[in-house]
Image (cartoon, rainbow, N blue to C red):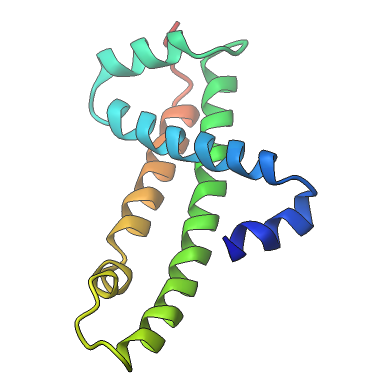
Length: 125
């Protein structure tokens, strides 16, 4: 919650943070569902509101990037916390997740995919 509180100072609203966090997660999820699946790309992009596919993908890219920034910050903080906990408990289950960085890597790959889909200029509606 400390990460949220620090971001609240910047944005001024905790509800905006919750909304942004959820939108970021959904953007990553939509990217995962659309990757390598043109039918899902058309279905998802036509279901989302926006003036055109490019505008929708711009929003998805921005929201996914914001999520990656938040996730990276959170992972860094968790790594510090896990290192402190490890002093007292050598078998901590969160440590492996933070250490391997797979979540961050997957999220960054999805941002790249969404950017390439957006930049391809294809219209899906």
